[in-house]
Image 1: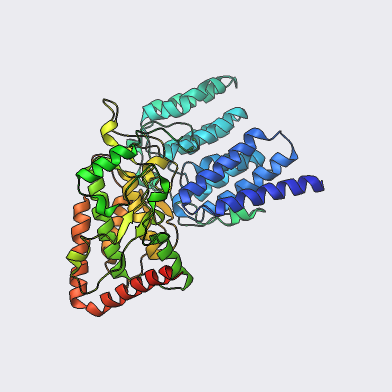
Image 2: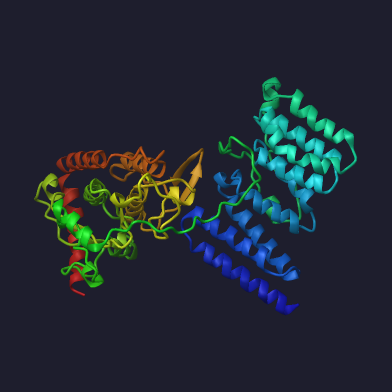
Length: 488
């Protein structure tokens, strides 16, 4: 018994500890679900498996239900199903009823499909009929969608030797439609609070759930979103990259790429990057000036704009790959200052050559497997230049908050978890950029780098003209950081 307890505790601690190290919330969720799947599929049936799956599922539900956007996420259904499978007190029937009362999935047909499948497997005709009624009452479905959800269950119902069951399904399909329902039926209130149960999991459910507008054209069985596989992309050879950068007069803003990795570091500041600047400020509990942050954002926008003009996806925009290569002179007009590089891009090993795409291919799928893995990669959507937009705001976020960016989905849009302080210069502009870059609608609607560049430049110029002392202090701090690293 002690060996069983030790094994379960060790695996539980290992998985939860690794999960807590993953900052991007959606990545953390996928990791947890993947680990639970491995345990469920690979461990032999027995006490160890039952205990560890139940503990992990309970922990995952408690963790992710603390975020409104996950409460109604259909991927959570898989966790609720596992809880029902391994629950001794409530079992599947109790979990489904509690979940309905919570209201998390009250408007989601996929939830009722899971519930109805369980009822059919238990030969519970009466409960099956009730679930079908609830689905038709609460979900915006036409008759074809109703048939697609519950039609495959007819054979199971027929096996119950109950003509009333099949007749009731057909009656729901053919006689009742969403258009005939009253407003009060559509607006059924959510359960205001969970009833007391032995498990802390159900006690932790909160009232007033915000729903996400997730709706599919065709209802399907709930599935866990799996991590996209890494794919091979047309990476650009070093020689071609050097030629392209040289022909565009862009080499000033990058460390000359070479097959010799040692040349990927600037000579003057060999070990100083924006990551070092962030860590330095974090260690002394010092915020990076919003004016300095804007200057970095301006130059980085210009760098990425020119890369994209050469039909290259950089796929490596992050603080570690942006070297600090010069001091700043506060007496030089800002519009001239940003024309000369004070940061340079150093890593090119994952860069993609859009000119080498196979005939007819315009987009990519899957993931790269780096810090630049963007929303589109994680949600199985096509992408082209999105990794660089994601890398841009990840870099700004790292400098602004001195920590890795975490993202959640709320009301159909992705947003960063952290809120920008009200006193941060250009706060509204950064909020707009975070929102726009995280929610690029498609591969033909990329935001304009020129607009980012000009907007930030105009705002920074106006701020410097109004308050030159603040700019001088920001530059002095930046130069002092560089000097401290040079002296090491």
